Length: 230
Ligand SMILES: C[S@@+](CC[C@H](N)C(=O)[O-])C[C@H]1O[C@@H](n2cnc3c(N)ncnc32)[C@H](O)[C@@H]1O
Image 1 (cartoon, rainbow, N blue to C red):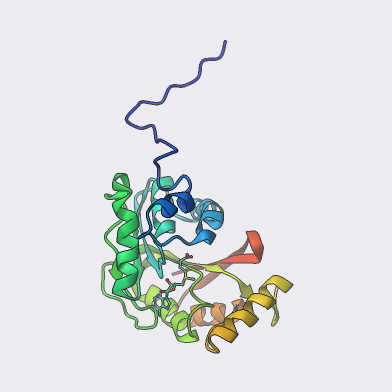
Image 2: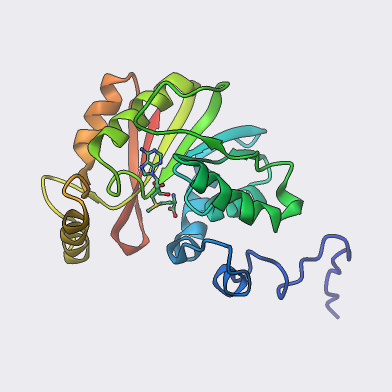
């Protein structure tokens, strides 16, 4: 007879009250919360990639452009060795992350209080970190944000540390698929300085900043995870 392993009541998470179980539903009940629907779809593939890439011993990840902060909470919860430092460009962005954090007191120790960082204004204040992570920033900001992201990460990472950039990118001088081509057109209509970046150009920028280019990973929905090691 098989015996189900019982979870200790103190460690059991109630799916109906856990903010991260269904963040859309939770945010709908808390009108002040900013929810980014894509994070619910991509958080687990990104976490699996980070699990492979990050050290197994305690380490610190600085996130640039954290948005709602939902990635920060998911990664911290499911990568127990990680201390996650979220950031945003404006005080309004910081407040949005703080709002989510307030609903997840179990993570208060490993998701630090968010800090204001403008990617395009390196070097950023702070102590060295093991990894810098940015999702969906490079195409929804001017090119200067990508240049700053790479330069800022180079200055902030420990030797051997990694810069991980998630999002849609062009490869071989063109779009990787029709979905990304349409997305690029929409972005450029909103802001002519936005748009998908060429992966190979970011590779060149990274090499110029002293990084080694590691294999990019193919992610769901024609996204990529770019990896650069200091
Ligand atoms: C599409 S959202 C992505 C947010 C989050 N990383 C995610 O994947 O849901 C882009 C974010 O980049 C931030 N951002 C834009 N320009 C920035 C800059 N120069 N420095 C830092 N953050 C910036 C915006 O405030 C916004 O939260």
